[in-house]
Length: 168
Image (cartoon, rainbow, N blue to C red; front, side, top):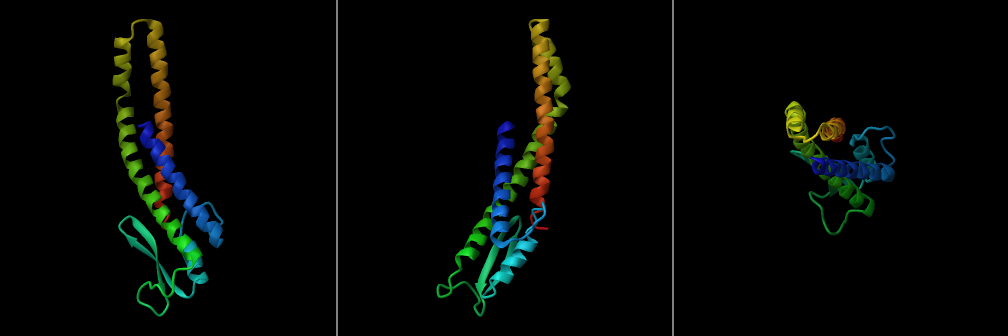
């Protein structure tokens, strides 16, 4: 469970890093939101020689770039470096958002099972502990682990919700 949480947290932080890079490059979204609409609009405005659109397929999204007057990308009019960077940042954002949501779903199931099993685990500790002192120590450890699981559940839900906000 800790490994899944750490993976989700890494992917979430990576997604946020990609969004911050995009914001810094294009000077958009000065608030705390992770929404991309304003950034996509600024990218369009800055690159008038290209038709820029957000392509969404299922949970994947990317920046589609076509030179104006052309039906598809061509070698004669390559994508400018800033625009190529924006494509890379959006690809990283898409991958991070997708992984954050996916890991969050799995994590919620694991944590839910753990919290539902708490009473059973307490009884197992009481039945298996050799001494009263050992039982106290094990119960204290169990309670600390349950507390950490609840904290991970809250953070995971926040990460999942924020990843879902990316396209709004």
